[in-house]
Structures are given as structure tokens and as C-alpha cells.
Image: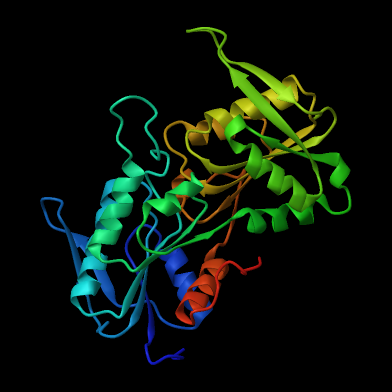
Length: 319
């Protein structure tokens, strides 16, 4: 590709090399020659082994665990490219860490998502390409353009094949009140009805009471969320729709497989039959269980990168 005099180059740090390779393959170009290592004291070292002068550069890096190391790798590679005279630098961040710290929940809280946005901008990024920010308003934290992709169409295409001609047998369930809009949009894509889990603590040290708003009795439930972290909310919701609601089967879909702490054990021991994940975060082989099925985001990111390179709109991407 060389439509406007600048060549396109895809580089990657260490957090999600497989997706970077798949994106490059979709575009028909090799992954840029670079190396991201660390010194004995833990400082990160970045080496670019090819010229980027005048090039349109895309750096693929999910800021997942270890979050701070991955953020620093991204910042240092952006700085290296800026100092090497890259024409334009786009940070491709399939999963944007610190996105849950997007507001002051209590007095004297930091707004860490804004801080990370400032760091990426100050490092020298010209624009950001990401997917399913936990809070959409984070786009406004950046003083550079942000292209925000959504993972729902990829998940929906998978579930449509599973549902077939029987949408009335399924119901999309939001595991908490914060995910209602996402679940409603997802249900619209599938042509299914929607239900909501309302959870609350009557008082301190009293376990949560789950109320189900909507009808799930004798239905197959699809729980949908943007991420699975410790899987507590997801597994509790799954148990509630089966034990209280009378659902027959439970499936789950999420964009980001954070899967920290007891998440794997909880999912393995839960009533959830299958969990559909996108590969915005690489799940290590030793944490991958039979209940997981992973879908590929590379074709969507590759199309977005091609459109950014050609100065075409990204909002019209269809999955």
C-alpha cells in the first residue's frame, strides 16, 4: 500500500503479538522489525531495527496485565518513533487499561484514565484506535482523534449462528444495571428479548439480593458485558437466572478477557455453558479452559487501519 507517498508499517510491543501479526497479515505486510526488552533493573528498552522516517506507523499494544509495564512499553515506542521522524503515529490499543477509573467515585480520587490519555498524547501519538472503552466518554479525555471500534457485531455474528431461526428461545441479559444499554443494543442485533439483573445489598455484611427484571423462565440466556475481570458479577448473574429465573442454559459474551484473580475457577465451576471472548487480550494457554471460545478482532482492526491510512471514515465499518 502506498496511496499518498507514505508507506504503512505495523509495529508491536509485547502484550498482544499474535493480534499484531494477524493484523499485518490481513494488510499483506510484515510486522515491523523492533525489539522490546528490559534492563536488569526493570527499565524498558525499545529498539527499532528499521527506518520509520516519513512512514505511517501503527503500534499494537493492549494495556492489560502487567498494565504499567505495557503502558510504558507503548509510551517508549511512541517516543522512539517520534524521534525517528515517523510521519504519523497511531496507538492501536485493543484493550485500554485504567478505563474504569474514569471519574471521581469519592473525594480525592484520581481520574487515572485521563492521566493515561495525557501520557499517550504527550509521548507523541497522533491518534488512537481502540475497542470497547469501558466508558465511552474517555474518548473526550484525549486531545487527539480517537477511533472507537465496537466488539458487539463480532460477538453477535457468532450468536446469530447459534440462535438460527429460534430467537424467541433466547433472551439477552444484562448482568448489572450499568450494562443495560449494551445489552439492549445486543438484543436488537439478535432479535431477542432483554432482561436485567438488579443486585443490591439490603445492609452492610448482608449478601446481595438478585432481582431479575424480565422473563427468563425456560429460556436460553446470553449474558453480555464489555469485560470479564474477576467474573464475580457474571457468575452470580448466571446462577440467579437459573436458580431464581428458571433459565435452561446460560452463555456469556464479552470483548475483553481480563480474567484476574479467581475468574478462571469461578467460570469453570459456574452454570455457564460457554464463554465467547474476543482476543483483544491474549489468554495464556495455562489459563484457557474448555468453556472458552475466542473470536478474532484482527480483520476489524486491519480494516480500520487501512481506512485511517487512506483518510477514509472509520465509523462506516461493518462487521
